[in-house]
Image 1 (tube, rainbow, N blue to C red):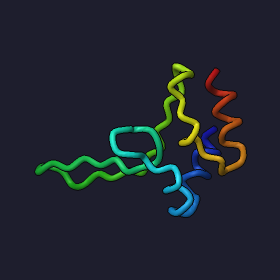
Image 2 (image 1 turned 90 degrees about the vertical axis):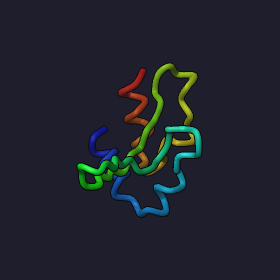
Image 3 (image 1 turned 30 degrees about the horizontal axis):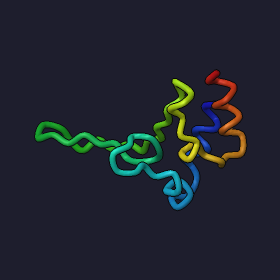
Image 4 (image 1 turned 60 degrees about the vertical axis):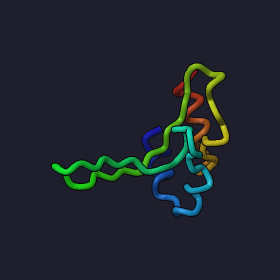
Length: 78
């Protein structure tokens, strides 16, 4: 699973953007950052997927690349 996630984040930006978060939803690929007067900008790319309960899974955001990503998710999440 870790290898699949690492490979996903190494994909070209255009491929990751196909799974972009939509307004009002946290699922999908996007950026997370915290800004405050007392801290430097802390930025991270994220891929947020609901896995449980099963009816809340939105497979539209589950990557098809790398090819083994979905298989790994299904093995990890019952």
